[in-house]
Length: 516
Image 1 (tube, rainbow, N blue to C red):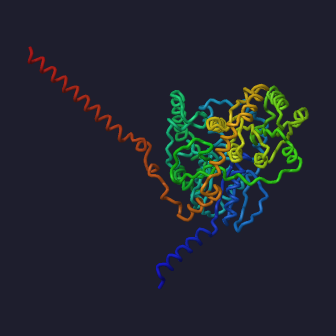
Image 2 (tube, rainbow, N blue to C red):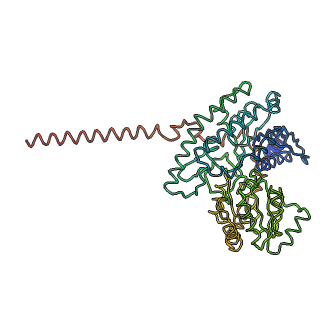
């Protein structure tokens, strides 16, 4: 018979063996953006290195060789990335950078429905759907693709969401996380946390319209896609509100602090890697920059060539007027021939490795979230030139937290750009703020990538971790907002007020009768 100590040891070893055993994990990440893919592939390859058998659905192919005991299978949504590349050439995002928030909701509906349907009907994905395979967990990249959440039920798996940003109206209601418009700015509005009265009013209105749109327009269309492309589909609501875990690419050092329910975990900075050695010509350019280096990139989704000519000329003139060397990620190679000698141009730079260089002084960026995290991690201040999406919100974060300034692209002139470059580089407060935020971002109990793997394995170990689910998910909308409580209370108070008024009226009338 086992002693108590031996029995406890046996239980401990058994639990370890369960955690360490290989799980079958499916990642569905249809967004055709390279910056998104970098995040998603980093997460999935970490699961491979932890010993799991991973299948990833994505528009991109990567020649990846596993170093762990797990396996890595890619199901490529062929043609999607190529189509997106052609659209990027055709669509001038600078002409659509300022969009009415209500129009933005309509645009997101269209983009989300198109992307979801193109994924569901893709031949490679359809083969997976009809393969009869089963998985232990399905991780879905969260972006207006709610029908894909039903894949967890289809494959008999626990549902995990990966959000490339932090908390948002898109994801909060799925796990019962409070999303109070009085202090939670909508991403498309880019307001500060401390909003003015009129900002709170507009924020509340946009939040209301968004929720109405989501439940009465967008979700029914997503549900129709389920019925069209899935054998034996479940109801969309059953798929939506069955989330075991939300991994969020955010951290308080960068974004505004917000409330989170227990199943939401911050892993911001998880994709940042140790810097690699730079190519020789680039390394020499950086090493020999006695006055430092300015790095300018508008990211992978914005075509810099679409900048109006007068803006490109203004930027070139500004760079010729500063003492620092400049790295400019720029697609227009013909324009690059006429640039000053202190400017080095390329269609691609190893961004993380550049930001880690000791001579890096400033990052002029579109303020994409991944880029913002990378620059904060390295303690490099920024000038934010937001174009679309969440970039304006990230720019607000940078300016509010003191590690950067915002320069709308419409306001770029030689003088405004030179003036802001000098302000951010020469005023030590921006560098100091960036270093403080870097220290906060790095100061974690465990590396965020290890944390992500841990929580995914935690969900598997505890069969979906239902104990993390909050009770608000079991309430109807009128119960959640206490309308069923407030309505009777107010009705009772109104009846009581009417009775009191009636009694007072009767008393006054009787007194008049007595006097007469």
